[in-house]
Image (tube, rainbow, N blue to C red; front, top):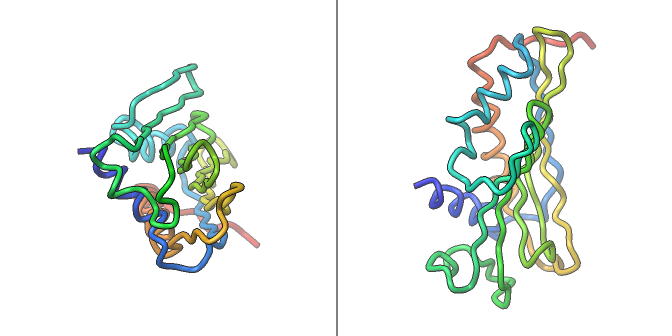
Length: 172
């Protein structure tokens, strides 16, 4: 079930029906400890709970799903602009409780983009969560577009989990 969810998210990321990706930032400050906020968004019931764990160094973790040409899902996920691609990787790098970074790459970085969440502890009971979308990069990214509306939707859904905490308005 989770594998099909991640495949669907990957298809949306490279849906080729939008302008080239533009950095989309969203920031929200909540009245909660950083560890609690991170656990709410990415704990055992979090967005990446079904990805295979590749390395576990305690607070540093890498989850990874690799789809190759011989995978039955290949036709659904390979970008039309890159029919000759050989491998698509969806990875999540975590530095708990400071950062979670979803990375989508084709052929080991020939094309790459991602979504990044940073958790900044402002006080013991106050956390600022910043979300950014990585620029499309790689030596083979010419002509490939990313659907920015879908990326913003993924960011919105992830940040929506923060509604469980009281929001704190920061002074200017």
